[in-house]
Image (cartoon, rainbow, N blue to C red; front, side, top):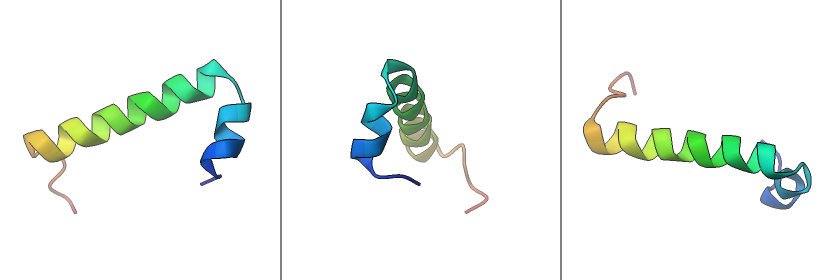
Length: 37
């Protein structure tokens, strides 16, 4: 993955994607959705 600074340069679209992925990851860990790990 790229550094956070490089991701922020891409624009609001990339930031929204990163935030969405982070949100899904947090929900997965909290809800126990991802158990393959």
